[in-house]
Image 1 (tube, rainbow, N blue to C red):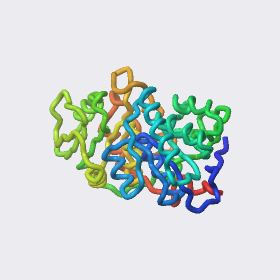
Image 2: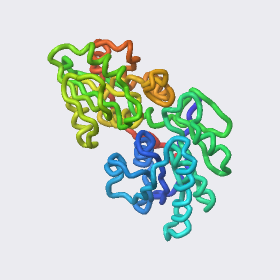
Image 3: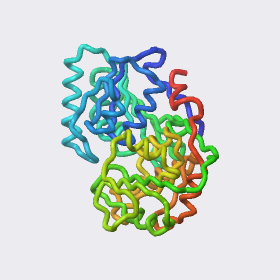
Image 4: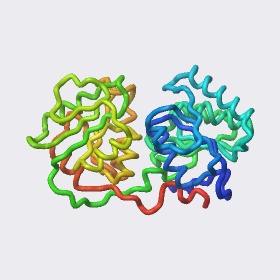
Amino acid sequence: MTATPLVLPWSGQARPVLLLAASTGGHLAELVRIEAALGSAPESLWITFDTPQSRSLLAGRRVLHVPEVTQRDLAGTVRAARLVRRLLRTSDVRFDGALSTGAAIAAAVLPAARSRRIPAVYVESMTRTEGPSMTGRLLEAVPGVRLVRQSDLWERRGWSHWAGVAASWRRAPSAAGPVRRVFVTLGTTRKYPFDALLDALARVLPPGVEVTWQVPYAPRRTLPGTVVEQIRPERFDELAREADVTVCHGGAGSLLRLWELGVHPLVVPRRAARGEHVDDHQAQIARLVEGHGLGRVVEAPDLRWEDVVEAGRHVVVDRGQHAGSSANA
């Protein structure tokens, strides 16, 4: 299958005024990278949730914070849609287009934009390697919303294919020496523990290795090194840059930031069967990582110290252009 350029309805306009909507986490990180390549006018408006990540990524931009819309949250989607419709009725700004990478917030913003005859585009998350998300399937029923998939592993009527965000990086050899410092990050969700990864890594750690564990809940065991629950984005960057190897769960937001920092991580996907997440979407993310060569992937029970060392033998480099640079072709 051949990927087409990301040609958008407002292509040809140098600095379009856009509505840019995404849930925080990986969805927002993807949209920020896409927008950076496309370029948009200062009057453009970001619609997302109020979190440390969004405040950091969107500092200095126009932002409408809406109440968080969680998975399959119909009431939250309706509330967000009402806020957006009210905004569009009363705003003096004329929007040239609306762009979203999901998740549920896209189902609130894009139909509202189409109701005002604003061109709308939904770019499915790079993590969806088996088919569209629930949001993507819902938007199939909204007339006029352009649907774009980043994965080449599935096809579906009405969806065009674009190589996507992950294709803008590649793996390269590293000149790193022995692994003496490790950074472990498990994201921000407290609801789903990931003790299988913590136990496996603690078991194989050699003496003398310095470890910082970012664990958003209280681990069931004492871990060697420093344990923190939450860290500021700036501190995350520092720890990832200073570490010889970063170990992470299969969270899209974490991965995107690590790749931007040049980190080739060791990725351990959460599994629903162990109660580590609501489903196995992180296994899809792991396949994406392996397919692009942007990290070493291992299941928690199979983790060995050799996997940690191997991850540190590579770095991630930008291919020289951000994803979406051909969007106006």
